[in-house]
Image (cartoon, rainbow, N blue to C red; front, side, top):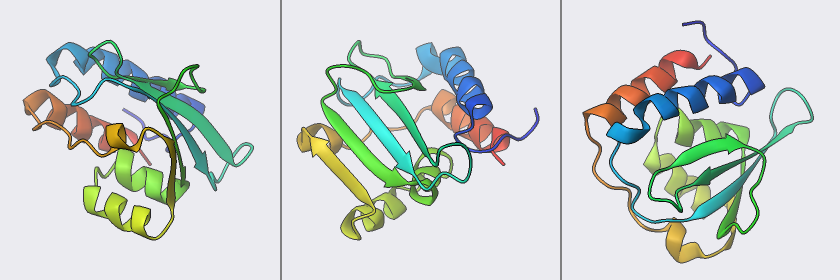
Length: 134
């Protein structure tokens, strides 16, 4: 598997395919919601990436662009997004939030629900996502 730039179109396509491969084996999301994300300071393209995570059906799906009817919209910078998505560094997320690097609009209660415990499939998925990322 070749390494791809985080949040490039190719990375999003591969990450989405990888997520689909593991979706049925992952623990269910802690909360059902639609979350739009805006990542700024992206070192390519227009400098920002719009994406979403939709767990409103009971399984999480990631994709490009924003969805209608989002419960929350989160804006963050590229480095923080990488720490969250690729490194899965929850401590960095808390620090970034306290420093104002993560801004949220909408139902904050849904964002604050702790994630469920990871199972083996989730750990495999996260390792492969790291492997995929430059």
